[in-house]
Amino acid sequence: MDAETLSLQFVPAEQVILHEGVEPRRVSELIQRLRSDGLLKNPPVVAPIGERWVVLDGATRVTALQEIGARHLLVQVVDPQRPGLEVSTWHHLVTGLKPADLRDQLSRISGVRLSEHAGEAEAQRLLEERRLLCYLVLH
Image (cartoon, rainbow, N blue to C red; front, side, top):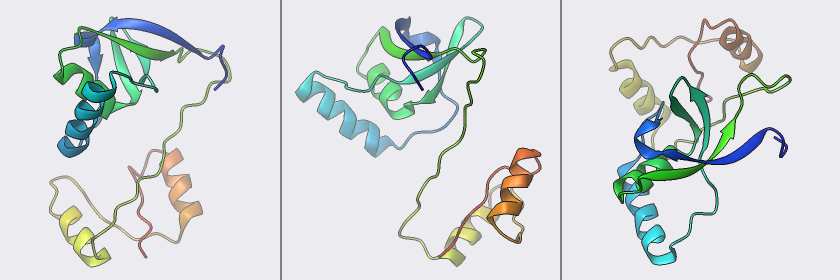
């Protein structure tokens, strides 16, 4: 994204909402760094939704700042109506689990259905058609 796509802005902390969970350990580690350094180098990225702000990137940062009592957050604001702007997903890496154990744990989640597909191209097509929530590459 270029400088014209993002703007820095202070927003009330209680108006910032997350769309994903956070790891408490990572939040605690960040709180310790914030307290020792007194510095946050990468403000969270948000998009406006009515009177609120949804976090696109930075759930751990927002949670840590809220937990230490920040009343306002400096955020990078993305205008979702900007022509040519594309918001995409990113990849997560899970380590320390055998593929069979991961499949077993996922299958226990209510509402989750696992299925096998031919490959990444098919998975990408199904994601674009909103017929697939995510896909896993297991090694």
